[in-house]
Length: 93
Ligand SMILES: [Zn+2]
Ligand SMILES: [Zn+2]
Image (tube, rainbow, N blue to C red; front, side, top):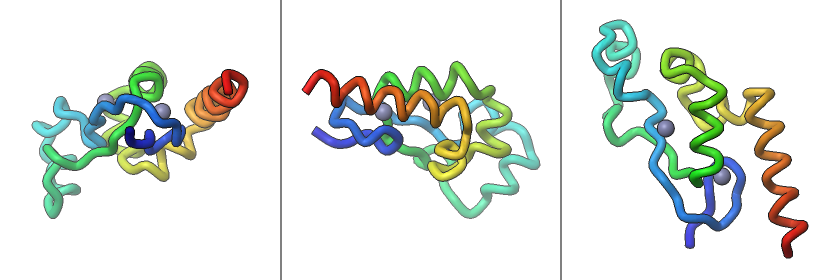
């Protein structure tokens, strides 16, 4: 199994578009990311992280600010969740 790019746990992974599909239509967002393929631009993360990303961050701020793994890891609430989720796994083992 592969590791989640956010919490580093070995989990079944899902694909998260760093530029959410909804925003592809917005011109200035599309122009900003002209050089890359926004359809395949993303990270592989586990379901738990994925759910939390979308719960905490709107599609618009995902596209405008949290459009890289580094920015996502800088999100205070998300970081808290990731630290917590890592601890959960340790306890089980
Ligand atoms: Zn994860
Ligand atoms: Zn997603």
